[in-house]
Length: 58
Image 1: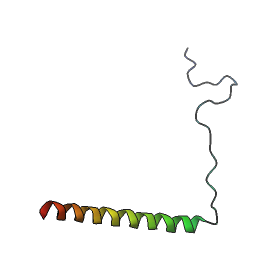
Image 2 (image 1 turned 120 degrees about the vertical axis):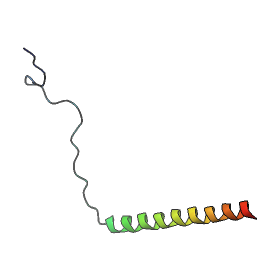
Image 3 (image 1 turned 90 degrees about the horizontal axis):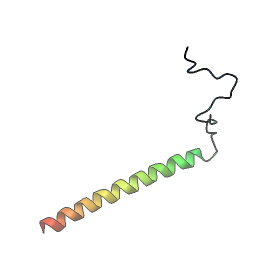
Image 4 (image 1 turned 180 degrees about the vertical axis):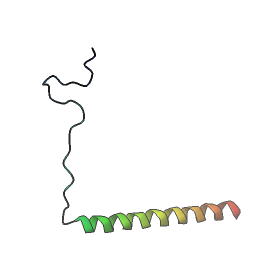
């Protein structure tokens, strides 16, 4: 008879349980900062793409 899955009194092995992340009072600032970084990256990509197109066409 197979004993697969039985612990026989041993503690469980594998991934450790993690606590749920606590909300800090800076969560609003972090969210705002994430949005600002998103806007900056998208703007940089658009400007770079336009510059590349102008360079190739002219």
